[in-house]
Length: 353
Image (cartoon, rainbow, N blue to C red; front, side, top):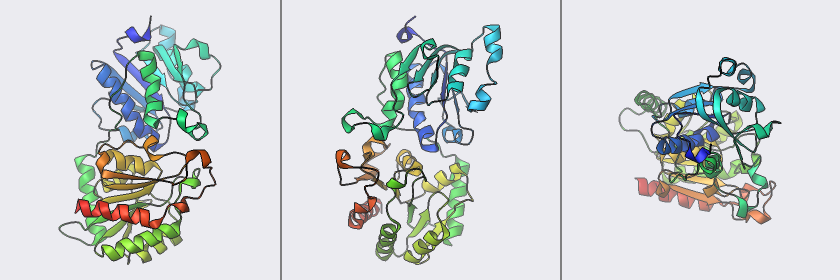
């Protein structure tokens, strides 16, 4: 049976990934729901990160899975010959997830990143890079397209919407407003709020704009907008760095690091008048929230390959001035001028006022 003639009623998708990549999976799940409006779609992912997909109407069930737990699942289905799913898709490199998919689904499609021996026992294997930084620019494509390829190519359809989906609940929005009122000592209207993401994750230090550049930027923005407050997004920034940023902003800086859940932090982001950040997870959330944003990207991967903003007119993508062919992981982000970011930030704030 050709997968392109399949009309699945139950679909399973599995991807154990970081917050940002899990968020991008909403593009795939939405595309499947539109292609098969009568299908029930389940998603299994990292236990702490599947929360980014909560409250989305096209997902029937969200669940956690890992290499260890996958080894214990699906044996009854195999023994009884009653497979719950018509088709299962697996992204990543975990052979245990592929084996589980084969136990519970009639058909299985995997990304070529999956490292498992019985590769011929699945219905389709779709090209997927183990490391996008090793791809030539002319052969690369947006992250959402790499993810979509795994469902589009075997099923024979093309998604026309690459925007991610995220839903801030009313309770989360109310809590964010309360926290910001308390932190900025305001009672009625919140002040202008500028969010900062200063660092990417530790495995990608090449993406980080130097702290002294952020301090100069914050100083100038504080001088231009003396009533604005700055909000450090995501936890883990060292105390010494926070101290320098706080001094640059005249003390008008809020850091919720370590005190909020991921979803609470995103609800805070939804209240921002401007987001400024490097290439990391929160930048993908800024894109899906549609808030005014200025984002910085290293020359190893241009911004349009990473984010696909729901409201493109609200995001200014600043790419490193060096071309990708000349770039390396040692190329410093400090070559992006403060003036470039300041001009983009003030333009966003003035338009948003």
